[in-house]
Image (cartoon, rainbow, N blue to C red; front, side, top):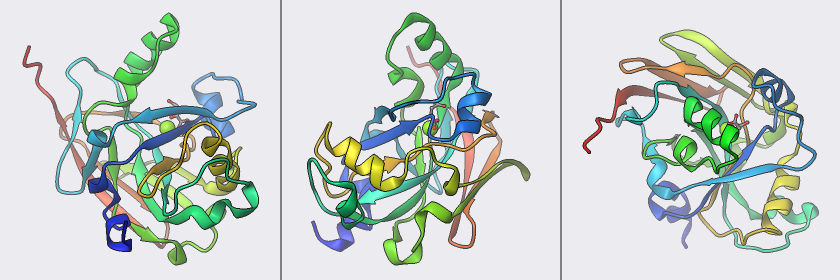
Length: 222
Ligand SMILES: O=C([O-])CC(=O)C(=O)O
Ligand SMILES: [Mg+2]
């Protein structure tokens, strides 16, 4: 894949691999134990949405949460990648939201079922434009923020991650091959909360990029 394709990774249609509970304060606010290994789940490429189109609350949820996250765009395929060369596989970054139907996730957890309905619905992965690697020389030292209708809800530094980006790349690549155009969502800092139809979300990586999304609702067409 050429560099220009990586720059439009959301159209390329590769995997979206998400890491959960990677910030202690967020694990605590949801009363989850601190992980001893990364918690992984997937979103399909149909989850992508770009600025200009709305985030849609699924018809089966009344508690859609925002989770602002740093996304890592994979630039070079690999399996069993050692931590020492993990950053060679990074093409760049993206600001991402891991939209989560929290009510549905709570039901899935209680029943011991997978999180697919809670995490993988259409528009569950709003993303910014591609950010070339050089623009974030220290991905472990950027500030993420999120506002809903101008009120700050989330603010946290990627320095608070439990598992570092090189560790995550190495860990994931021992489970599944990483491919060019894949996106890794690295987990959310504390402050997650609900959004509703007509809300406006703004999120940013301090000094690097920001983005705005409107919230709509997907009708039940059954
Ligand atoms: O809170 C969750 O659902 C897990 C998760 O995605 C995160 O920590 O970013
Ligand atoms: Mg998340």
